[in-house]
Image 1 (cartoon, rainbow, N blue to C red):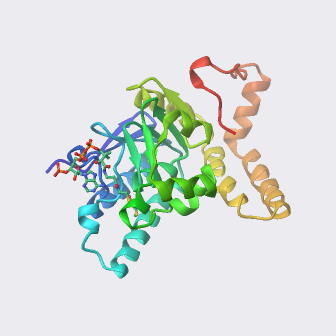
Image 2: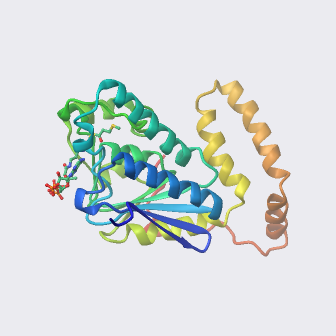
Length: 265
Ligand code: 1HE
């Protein structure tokens, strides 16, 4: 049997592919384990990572055939397993960039929501068919997706199962970069390569401190921020980065590129 997940190291960027195209990259227990192993490897070897789906779709979500026989107790264990694996992506040491195409639905959308930057082909689509299937999100979506698009939109998506276009997804910050069909993976690689060039501590703080600050009161968030900022400024990479700017060796902030779209608010 082919590997359920492919792994390639492209310089400082790990490129991880869900590789179960015949089942539209449906997420089985074995696929979760293979993804988790690839993520751990990327943590050791890379400074940033890309996640994409082989075949015509990013992911059709939970493997419904495997799930059909589960008891409630087994369902809880499945959720815990997903939470642990997706948590190692979202709160790990390196940023993940998703390349989304075709369907990113149900648990596939929950997986996408655990990534830090999402690039999507213009014909990608997003849905939460859980309500239509008589089940519920179980891969962290009620926390992550609700925070990105808002509880109200997520409620509609779960109750109706209707699909959102990539452009709609971009307007609600679910997608950060829209590309012409077929170009999301190339763009995701480009974005990940750029992110890999940042100071490691800054990347770590953005993906680990920033989301935690949203769980704090404003006062506590500001206190936490001051400490993270001080720690970042004390790193050798920060000193080198500031010196490079002051000595006019560093790139200036460039105006937005038309093909980058607007960064959603
Ligand atoms: C699957 C799955 C799956 C496809 N589990 N086997 N997710 C869903 O409710 C989405 C279900 N899937 C679909 O709506 C469609 O498959 C797609 C829109 C994603 C793609 O359509 P299409 O026409 O390209 O493919 P297909 O013909 O529907 O499926 C091809 C095969 O993949 C077929 O198997 P085959 O043996 O008959 O060839 C399908 O049965 C199989 N397949 N999707 C198992 N999801 C932790 S909680 C998370 C909760 C959820 O994720 S709920 C949402 C589940």
